Length: 190
Image 1 (cartoon, helix red, strand yellow):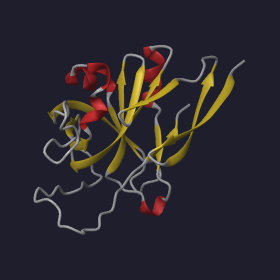
Image 2 (cartoon, helix red, strand yellow; image 1 turned 30 degrees about the horizontal axis):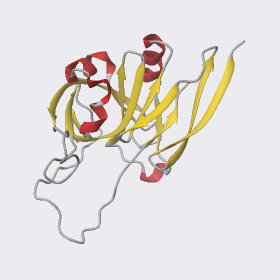
Image 3 (cartoon, helix red, strand yellow; image 1 turned 180 degrees about the horizontal axis):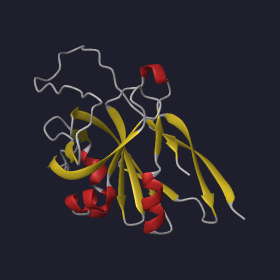
Image 4 (cartoon, rainbow, N blue to C red; image 1 turned 90 degrees about the horizontal axis):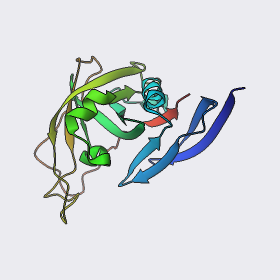
């Protein structure tokens, strides 16, 4: 008989419900370099769960259409990060999101890397597949994650989206500037 397995996890300072149905046990969760990774029993289950991934915002009236959850699947693992549209067919995310397993970058897109947008945004749930890596900053060495060695990566999506996008300003920021950080959290899967 199928069992309902429920776990509460903390991700990006937001609480969400993670549940899976079936005879298999819950995936093993780990966090390394700020990236949460789930280890599944096999690649087929990981692929199925990636396709069913759900994302919501804590406050639907302030849910950005341009911010989604990057779901990176490689073999029987899923890793999650945040991604933001910067063009109709491009997203920016953190370079460290693709550091697990030292995999070939194009292989990660081919394996099924997705961007899942929040179901309670005004545009609703939408899933976009990664086509290729346009640029990945090198974050190795002592200068990891500082202004001289920024932690970012740009991905091209397989199709353009009509959700709008954030404008990228290459001029830097003024001292004392107030910023708004937009985020989404996984609702769960199962």
